[in-house]
Amino acid sequence: MRKLTEISDPVFKPVSYNSFDKFWLKFIQDERDLPFVYLTLKITFIMIPLGILLFMPFIQGWLWWLIAALYFIYNNFVFKGPFGLMLHCTSHRTWFKKEYNWANYYLPWIVGPFFGQTPDTYASHHLGMHHRENNLEDDLSSTMHYQRDSLRDFSLYFINFFFLGAITLSIYFHRLNQKKLRNRVVRGEIIFLLICIGLAFINWQAVLWVFILPFFLSRLIMMMGNWAQHSFLDREDPGNSYKNSITCINTKYNHKCWNDGYHISHHIKPRLHWTLHPDHLKSNLKEYEVNKAIVFEELDFLRVWLFLMSKNYKKLADHLVNINGMYQSEKEAIAILKNRTQKFNVI
Image (tube, rainbow, N blue to C red; front, side):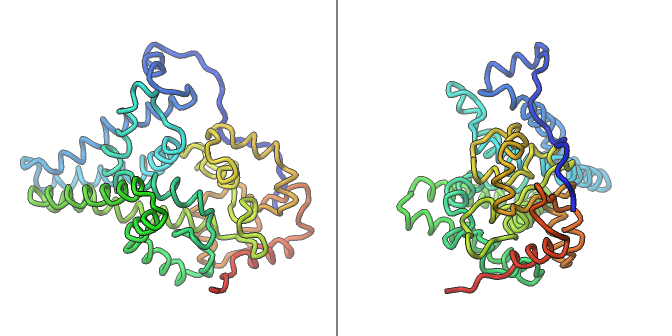
């Protein structure tokens, strides 16, 4: 186990802006989100052109496969995580000012499909359903009724989400009479499908590489992340965000993906700016201690998922932060971790 010492995750520090920065600051609402501009420009002028080139008839043979390989690398190993969590941040906190609201559609409608994100589905699911239901019974992505250290149970969880997620989400919004959210999901899914079908007449291999493969990988990674974020649940208090979510600190992932590791504070304050999560943790240590909140150091969600799938509780305990001595021993900590991954009985 670890003692909580210094937190090295990113926080906002005022800097001197150059003329290019000042140009973009006229359009965005929060200067702290200026890094999103630079990431979006890199994706727009590096990765997306590679994807478009794969549809060009004059790109064939070894050159086509070279571009496809570059696209795959940029999409999955360079930009996927940062883009996905930039989409997350800008869904919670509108990025551009009201007078430039049209620009807020660029990420979900233009860039998103290249990462396998169907337009508006992510925001509708995450804001309209997941945060409202908070991993409880009516949360369509709830982990409650799965054994959360079981690869078999995760496979069932993923299959259910992948094949039925959009359908059950639409039914959920219809049942709540939230027609706008329902229509956004249905519209986004259908438009993405029609675009893929239409472009397949031009080059089906490019559609597979540019849209379908990212679609599958994005949904897989999102479910692995959500599984890890909500694997350790207190059976007596499952709606308590200190007890149904985890936080990962002092990890490269937080520097790359806008402090996404702070999932406890994100559920407590969904609109809290990504640069403020480390301060929230430090300011609420007593709550973390009282609730025996699960905080890992130098782990990201995918590594937490891997350790769960291999039932490596010793490794998880090695990275567990013992806030104010709330665990008396490693044995006690492992017992709590194991207890919190147990499946909830279906009533």
